Structure formats: structure tokens, C-alpha cells
Image (cartoon, rainbow, N blue to C red; front, side, top):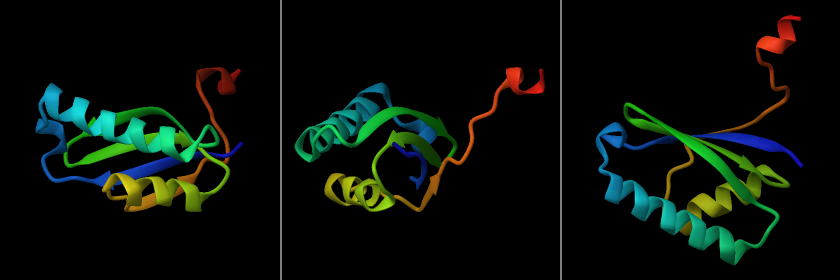
Length: 90
């Protein structure tokens, strides 16, 4: 199944409190539960005014639908073509 990186522009994201991040996460998980097991949230990185999320989904449309239902921006959705790490250099 394809993997996607979603860039969400959220002013002040890096200054959100733990409680605010918990609320966002709960909303996301609730939407995912309603959408079914085909779409999965793996993890997110909060940096500055953006949140970068990694999802597994059958297509970009499903990723965008999750964002729509959750009320989250999905400014850029990119399908991951290859994953590399330090072992790639070997």
C-alpha cells in the first residue's frame, strides 16, 4: 500500500501545548476509525509552523478526505517513492 507524507501548514504548530496536540490526535484517530482500516496514521513531526504526517493509504484522495473530515489542512500530499537510510550507502 502506498505511503504518503502530508505537509500541513498550521501557524504556531511548534508552540501547541501537549493538550492541544492530544486533541488534534484524538480528532484524527476518530476520523480514521470511521474511515476504516485502509488508511493508517504512522507518525507526525511538528516543526515551526508545519506538521508533517506519514500515512499509509490506498490513494491520495483518501488522505485528502481524512484531512477534510478532520478539519486539517493538507497543503501538500506526496507519495513516497523510495525510503532510504544509512544502510543505503552500504
